[in-house]
Length: 442
Image 1 (cartoon, helix red, strand yellow):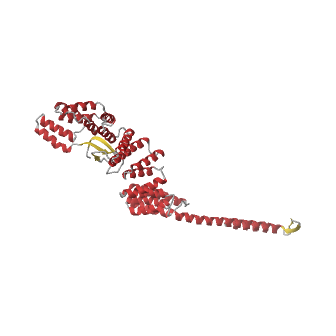
Image 2 (cartoon, rainbow, N blue to C red; image 1 turned 135 degrees about the vertical axis):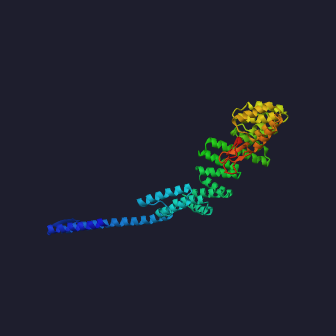
């Protein structure tokens, strides 16, 4: 506007100067077939008037464009779409965003809400406000508001997946696994190239014992390269094993053997599958195959249950024969020599090979703490061989303070279990249990 006024003043000055210098100056104008003369200052004035009108038209067009831009800007602002803000406000908004995220991560939810309110004054009802609100509500465990906000996000195609993730986590935290599974399945149908989609869909299907569905998710995760081949192999073998147990409960022995064999072939170091497969072979008069399976798993992943299952194949053995058989079996593995000592000490005591038993538990105690079973064996040895009643009683008293024997321990939270499980009851991790010869209570 200021530029237009300046141009008008400049035009008037030019016309006045031309008129003042030569009032009688004429310009001959030829237009079409007519010819006539005009004062020079009139022609110059007409040129400037035309220029001013042209500038006014251009200004009118730009004004209309700006008006439309303001309407679009206001609409975007109300719908939470990105918008242009002043540089100072942008910097404040960025700091408020960082502070909100930091406070949420640290668990300072009161401060997080304060920073979020400040951020909202700078950027309005932007979708990022809803996303940060989700994080805060999750920390507050306000699941009712979390679900309402998630439903709001589901209405927009751009934020639908975020809403589904929040719903899935909310229902899972409330142990409403059927609704959590429904949300995870919806996300799985939309996107299969996101890790959290694969994670939740797999875990929730597994928890609902939908092992075929869990296998479908695993295949998708491998195809999209969200799972390594090692993870895929490990998880698939567990799914096949659980699928085999499901078929066994239905009385489908052929399908039970099929899935069990697949699980064992896929992961030869997976102890539960090897134990059940060897038991099935023994029951179907395949004793040699059962022994071969147990020798293989004993070599690569020795556990107490493997040795116990191997000795059960030969129930007719005498105590002395069991010692000899175990000594031969122990030669197949050198990964855990303490386990050999642990088993042979017990067998030697039962066969009344006192000196050998003493040598075994003494070898065990060189690098390992006394377990409850070792304490009982030593107490029995002191009572039966040395006839030292006081020493026997001391070991019996110490037994309760000794470490536990042969447990499966969750690698995530340390929860122990006497048998393998697909899920930890405490932290709900999938396939976290690893076998330990002994386990400290703490």
